[in-house]
Image 1 (cartoon, rainbow, N blue to C red):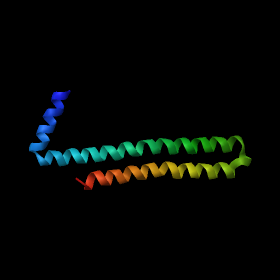
Image 2: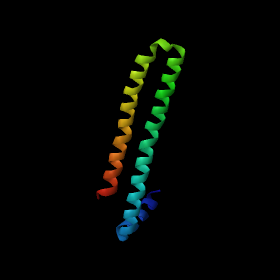
Image 3: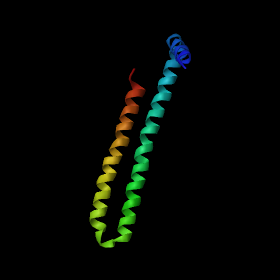
Image 4: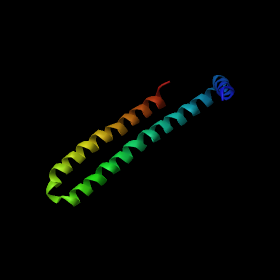
Length: 92
């Protein structure tokens, strides 16, 4: 494993196009993984909200409000991931 890392680092120092390609690959993977977690989280939030409202319809107002607060906090994680993607792509 260590020899492979040394070979990649040697190839990157000799070839700037390879460095750019690896940086773009890394930034794309970073955003893809950053969007995966919030996507699952938002699905869980609204799934549980629908389940709670269907069990007790009289609590629809408070449950809906809490679901949207949870959605906003979870969506903030995806936006942070997008900012990191932009920083990785356009800096360095």
